[in-house]
Image (cartoon, rainbow, N blue to C red; front, side, top):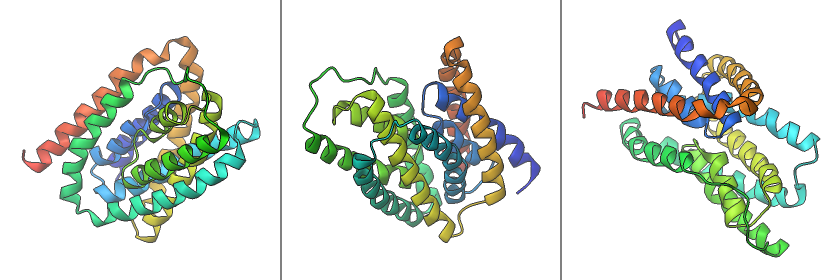
Length: 251
């Protein structure tokens, strides 16, 4: 690693943490940050799991300490998330880097479009039975777990949308379950990438500290109109990232 890569990655991961705290979807900035800095695709995904996992761990701890997590339901979701993330991470390692860049050119614009158009999360429909809610939540954990293991950006947003919309959970409960699932998928896929030598530990750790700082500042700025800068920041980084990939592919 060289100094230039740190100079590129750390501020963008800070920005991703800020965006994540204000509106979600910070991974749409943090993963491209590594790729813009020239980190190989699989190494970028693995290292991003380390830096994002640091912030997710802190957030999950805070939710658990404040009693916002239903561990009975969350435990079942945790198991499904673990299985899904393990499958997704191994699938990623099987895809050649050039093919994966093409995949990202398709997935990333679709993901950011979906995240930026997300509506209010609270469901106005009558809740399901406890068993039906748990089964749907487990299915969401398995599917989104595979997505997070394979790629990742937007995972938290997709989970909340599914848990409030499909499983009809209240937003407060969905947030807690989302943290459990997201942390599980992050750490599971991180272990897969570590075992396959696809993590740059020093860069990931330092970037993770920047991400935590960005998340802290974003939470402070939320009530002061900070959300107004989210879309321009996110779109700017994504445009730079897409131009870089297209240039490298000679399209």
